[in-house]
Amino acid sequence: MTRLPAMFAMKMKPDPNAPSGEQMSKLPPKVRWKADNYNHLMEQPTIFYAIVIALALMGSSSSSAVFLAWLYVALRVIHSLVQALTNKIEVRFFVFVLSNIPLFGLTYIAATEFIQLSAIA
Image (tube, rainbow, N blue to C red; front, side):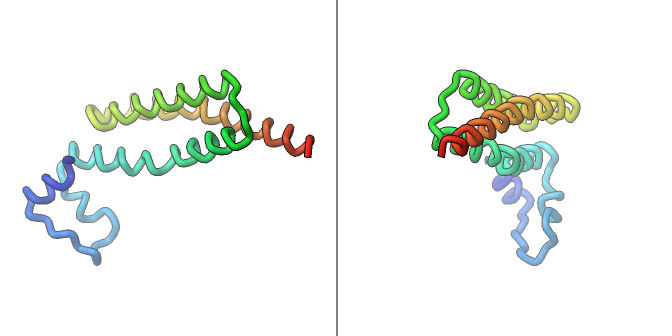
């Protein structure tokens, strides 16, 4: 919602031969923050999606897994808001580090569930 209007305003023509990120670096910082946030949502959260899907397929519905999943989502929403609105690196990094804690917890739960299911089979 911000990148395309900025590109039109600058009369920027997308160049498929330009090195990755070169053209985007010419956009104003407030526009780039939002684009960077979108890219970040395609990185670590994909691990979260895989873990949550694995837990669902294993039939896990523990309250701790549900709590950790929602905590991760809330922290990532906060991270996105910080990045898109102020981009305070220290705050953003702190929220990112905090979001790793529930992700590690979910990974542990998924691993133990998998081990228990493997022992049964």
